[in-house]
Image 1: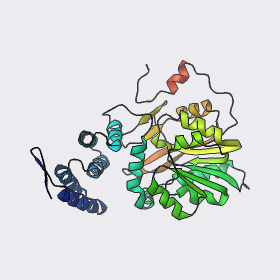
Image 2 (image 1 turned 180 degrees about the vertical axis):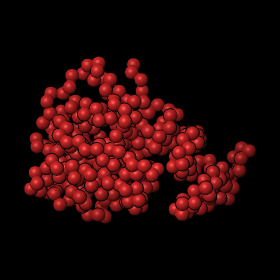
Image 3 (image 1 turned 90 degrees about the horizontal axis):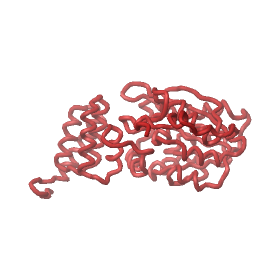
Image 4 (image 1 turned 90 degrees about the vertical axis):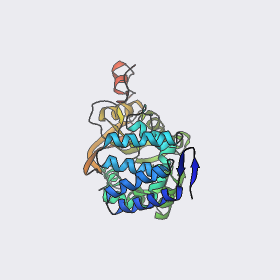
Length: 328
């Protein structure tokens, strides 16, 4: 079926056919043909969001940064209200970086990924949940059981598999219904909540012995608000274990080309201390591979027995600056 629009003729059926063939080519690693089909799909239906997303990711995989950025800009021009397009335009330098990824971006990203999420991550050597568990085991009492555990950004429940044996109560929180459905099927959690992470920890009145967040804060730039709320939920001897992608720069955080944030060790330490959390162990490790190269991360354990928060002076304010912005 074709639909006229001005001087254009839109062919959504042909566009979807091209998109489906492109996805088959991507699965078969026939990338050149996939690119041609995705461009044809977009030409036939300029509002076909998934075609833009897959084409942008394909160009990113091939280190064609300017071309991927142009695809994301075209996507946003075609669908100005699309949160995924807006975020990826910002990530590729076409707009100011937000302080965190929007709910719409996170939900859209993981709804599309939920069905084969675990399978795809396995091909990338993904090990953030295991690293978080190992860091927890290193700072918890070896006999610790019967814990109240909060798993933030629980996704499909990969952390739940590791932590369920330690838990009297295990609560998972995530924005994506599709990811939560996968987590529910695992049978690890006593409760699963669909809610944005910061909103949940801000309203929650329950205390926890352990709060985990594996590969979650890569969708946050500024960590001040979530860390402060998390600190209020920890019991006196509680532990907060989380990972971040490590930024090579000495200070701040940045939204990178792939759409995730990276943080410097000094910035994370600063925000923890402002939230009255004391870092007690930090581990540098590979979280997964991306474009064939290891993604280095920090896996950090903290507790609430911190000294008074760091004074807010000029030097500290500089540490808190995003690497994507200039000081005022």
